[in-house]
Amino acid sequence: MGFFKLVLPKMGESVSEATLTKWLKSVGEHIQEDETLAEIATDKVDSEVPSSVSGIIKELLFAEGSVIQVGEPIAILEIEGDDKVDTTTLVSNNTAKEVAEEVEVDFEIPGTELLQTTEQPTVSHSNLDGQGRFYSPLVRNIAYKEGLESSELECIVGSGSEGRVTKQDVLDYLATRANTVVNKQTVTNIQSQSSTANIPATAPAMVVKSSNGDEIIEMDRMRRLIADHMVNSIRTSPHVFSVVEADVTNLVNWRNKVKDSYKKREGENITFTPLIIEAISKALKDFPMINVSVDGNNIIIRKHINIGMAAALPTGNLIVPVIKDADQLSLVGLSKAVNDLAVRARGNKLKPDDTQDGTFTFTNIGAFGNIFGMPIINQPQAAILAVGTITKKPAVLETADGDVIAIRHMMYLTMSYDHRVIDGALGGSFLRRVGDYLEKWDKDREI
Image 1 (cartoon, rainbow, N blue to C red):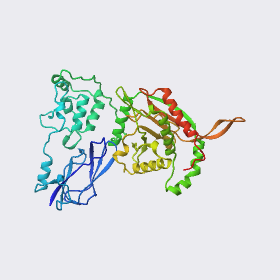
Image 2 (image 1 turned 60 degrees about the vertical axis):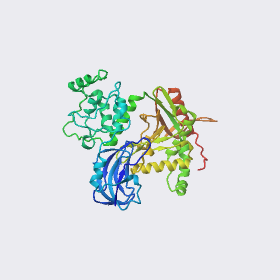
Image 3 (image 1 turned 90 degrees about the horizontal axis):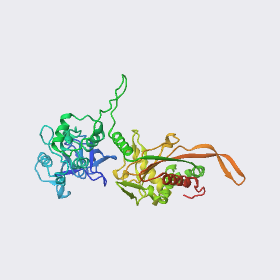
Image 4 (image 1 turned 180 degrees about the vertical axis):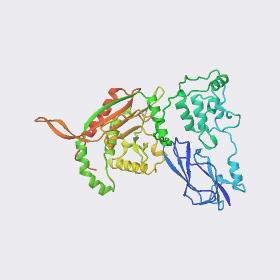
């Protein structure tokens, strides 16, 4: 018999922690290899943690709602024999209780010495009443970058296990920092600890009073993340907007002609989304300065064209899965990628990597009957394009025999872009190019 430490697996290049939302097994239960032990949530998607071995659950090391770092042990399993398990994951203690106690011993965090300098604000391990308080490396790093003094960090109420301060707690505090009335004594203490502390001017936070009969609901985790992301985008980028109207009659007629045979052949529908994403990809190759991000005073021109497609979830929240190297895919490949991501998004089956590394975002607000809209840039990208509903309208056509009025399928395209790096001429020209690709769709194209 031996003991196995099940750790939180790596879930993506930029994912360093996850919130434990639900245990699906209890202490004493048997779990099979690859059977799901817990449900977790990251900043991007919800996911599941399977067991890498079969065994009896002896200890669950975190409470639901805890924030766990990638690589941290989350459970102790009793397993049969030692030959099936990597010896680096085995625990030689005689009891599961001893194993759990060993896991919970304090340890040194690499890199914390960088926080203990005389020139920079330091983060203390002590809380207000002098007892020890743990801060994860990620929380320490955010505090260091934002210039949070130890006394200010200690004032943050933790929502994690045993009052632990999570990344979201720090981000929420920073978002409301300027509108929070700081206790005078706290300010005095902070100033006395560091003469270089920069305390921003504060103003009373707006209080919204509810009336009799109003219903109050708390934002869920994803809605809070979306709210923070949108507010941050408006603060970061000066948004400017351009609009064009495209005659997509050829596109509509072509899709109507091929959709039945395509479904019979491929077993799935072909929607307008991959057709529009193909046009966007072509235009991004024509205008690479749209496919950029801003890093301080530097412009990063992205090598890859990774198109994010905004998708509404059944909960009403929004998620943006990404089609990687969209310009390298055929129309069939784009259609399959779109359908796969849409199905997995609706079923909460997206992986963290599915929402990473987008360079440009597309959103179809026409699916909700909207004519056009002005979307908010998905940071750190520099632009986002929205298309409205396709409607039949009278339009003037130029013919060899003169102008005529005809009924055409028309669609508005709108784009929001970061005016720090994209001016009206560039943004407008790019958007017009997307419209041109859609208008000039080959009616005889084979797929």
